[in-house]
Amino acid sequence: MSALSRRRFLERGGRAAVGLAGAGASAAVALAEDAVADTGADRLVEQAAAQWAMLFDSTLCVGCRACELACNTDNELGRTPDEIFEGRPAEDARALAPSVFTYVTFHQVEADPSTAAFGKVQCMHCIEPACVSSCPVLALHKTAEGPVVWDGTRCLGCRYCMMACPFLVPRFDWDSRNPRITKCDMCFDLQGQGKPPACVAACPSKALRAGTRADLLAEAHRRIETRPRRYVHHVYGEHEAGGTNFLHLAARPFDELGYRRNLPMRSYREYTKPAMATIPYVLGGLGVALGALRWIINRRADVAAGGHEESQP
Ligand code: SF4
Ligand code: SF4
Ligand code: SF4
Image (cartoon, rainbow, N blue to C red; front, side):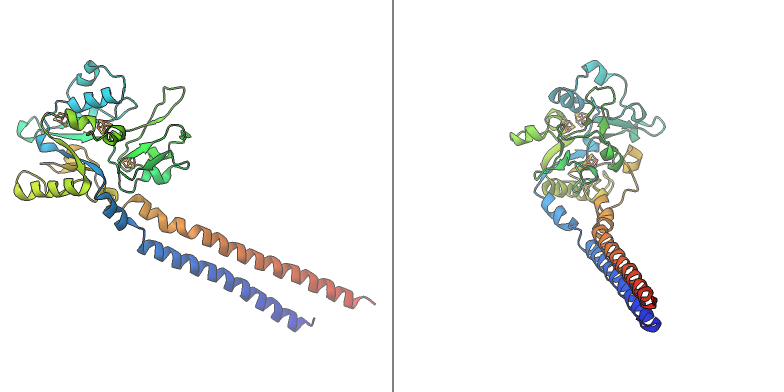
């Protein structure tokens, strides 16, 4: 092969490799754009309308903590009533724990009783749960009925779900020899028997209600519309982190009641899905480019060997 034809051959091979790699990258970009356009989030929100859900109306809560006691009893969490009712439900003194699936918080501005208000902390049962999408072995999963439940036989103890949860809910049982993740499962077993969650059944002031997400969302908006001066005009959980199956109403801004603020109004999975979708194609494009490069190098070696033989006497 002459020097000129060899150069042309290498140029064409190089262009082919670049073209193939470019095609892989273009496919990845196109796929990423498709993924942004259709993450299925709207469809999941529609499906959630008929799922089990809970509504907490802070304006009706009297801070009795009967919900905490009922949760503790029904889930056999092992706390004594004295431990549950000890002290005031001050926000800074309380936290979720392996033996605490829910707790009620108390908030008051500068000892002014007119500002007193309660919040309720537990799993929000997200429509697209970050805990589920982060779990490498599907130990957590979103049921068709709505609650996000956990399977202890699968859990690796990696604690990715703890890092992924936008509401900082899952807790790890550090003291156990067989450590596990713990959180509220919206009383999945009870609801399967046609009963409301234990905390809902125990609430004496109807601050907690159970029903379908569509019904509770409609009820929440109806309360805001009929008593606009009683409520902040926002249903916490309608859109936070892509929407949740636990909804909240309050008379004061939610961040003043300890609720997490500045959360995205899209699910965390929506942010990661486009990037994750490109990975097979980027790897595929890289493989094609490397294959083409290897072919070129082999051909160069063959051409060089041929030229060497031609120059032999
Ligand atoms: S609040 Fe956290 S633990 Fe509960 S479903 Fe959402 S991501 Fe999972
Ligand atoms: S729904 Fe059930 S598990 Fe969740 S906080 Fe209420 S009682 Fe506890
Ligand atoms: S049982 Fe009802 S009123 Fe009592 S603390 Fe719980 S949510 Fe509030």
